[in-house]
Length: 90
Image (cartoon, rainbow, N blue to C red; front, side):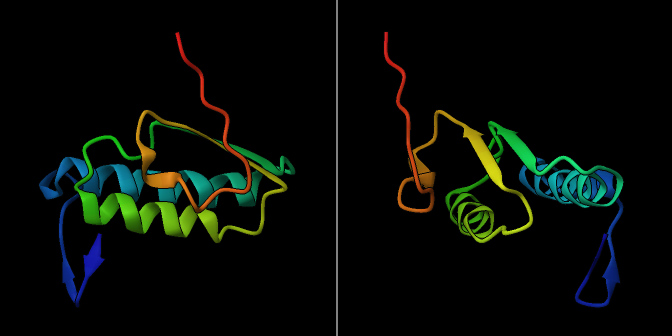
């Protein structure tokens, strides 16, 4: 990972940074290697601090390549960034 002109090994990133980097790579690969226009995000904010969760929710809300995006999360950070919300209770 290169940031601010410095290279950082993946292993030196925090858990949240690793999650964000891995998610970015997966999305790029999905876009390039597949005609599937649906993406599922399963607990994408795991190990992220509040600022990174908010940033990720904002970024996911701006993705236009996919026709459908599904976010499965126990985190309420995504409220307001998604078109529809389904809550499942006991």
